[in-house]
Image 1 (cartoon, rainbow, N blue to C red):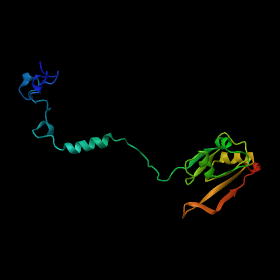
Image 2: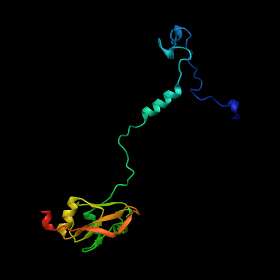
Image 3: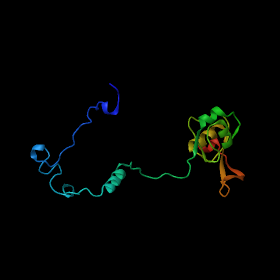
Length: 173
């Protein structure tokens, strides 16, 4: 037997007959023809506005997300324990050095230093902001904290560099 279009066997399930609605009660779908009793959908031509319904279901199925997303980038976070590993005692740590060490991605964005696990070396750290625990840990180690000021017009570090905020170990107690 050759394989041609007219000799191909039919696949199972392809010859299902469609429902014959409204052909009397003996057919199983008589009287109201599976449309229910009253209302717009029970009448002929009663399903109007399917596009609007589709749009409403799309909107109803979208996830409800509250709040907002800020367009300002978040500060890059560095812990004191990582600074302790990467830098030697007496070093000056700037955001450019943090980029070279691979601790942050970009020195143009804000850098925040957190005081996780403390600091054992004397470091001068220049960053945009510090947590209170980081300030006290740096002071205990004998280091200094310098807050970096940015020039608002050019978005660059100003020539006045930084404002030094020296904290002694006596003040933190």
